[in-house]
Length: 292
Image (cartoon, rainbow, N blue to C red; front, side):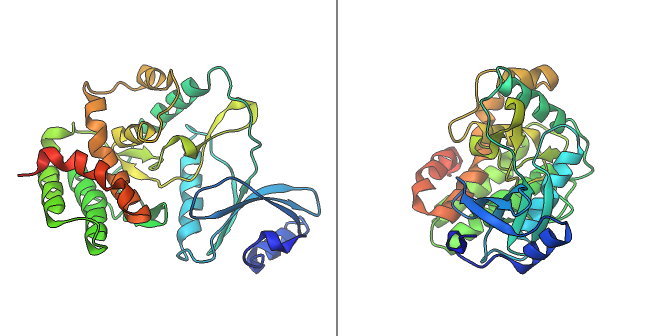
């Protein structure tokens, strides 16, 4: 194998697992397009099996374990398609390889229907059994019964504190955000908690076999369904037919599109913390009506 394709040696735990399963050793590694945080490879073993391998030698020890458990929990709902997880360790995740295909004629409708079905699954509380990550930032998921408190404390205020500590937000920005949080009950309709993908932009939907949509790279938790939908419109939006198909399964309260910026404030703050001041203007635009 050309080991130069890997910036770090092959994780011994991964190689040991492959050999235990009778899959031989890694013979080839081809870089795949991925995010800005992890290395992603299509690996082929000496037994001609192919897998997707995600690597990050500097991530927290539970980073890939959280992603693996999130994919498994989403998959067990039977509502959305996700890649099968085979093995995970502190610095790697081994998954099913789903060759890219041309989207079917009903690709976006399939995604809308399956997401609506996911959002109809019951959850006892807001949060999750474990913390997850949105990008490389920790996403605290300690459960709460109150969705407004959860979104305020675990999402907006958590990110705002990180940004303030980095000098990315001014005091006036945090005041406006706190005012927004106070007004959430009048701005956001009551919604029961449901399983969410949590980072549902177009780059985290993969067109796999039979032109079917698969969800990848989750930042999963139990939260407001509208928050998942809002993210679908943040970076380029989803295809025609998606929202209509969603609403044929699960109706939305009127004015949902006007609420999307409030939900997306969380992701813009997260991007501000991850990537810097390029996202500050969008954050301040959303906060502007809440300045006193």
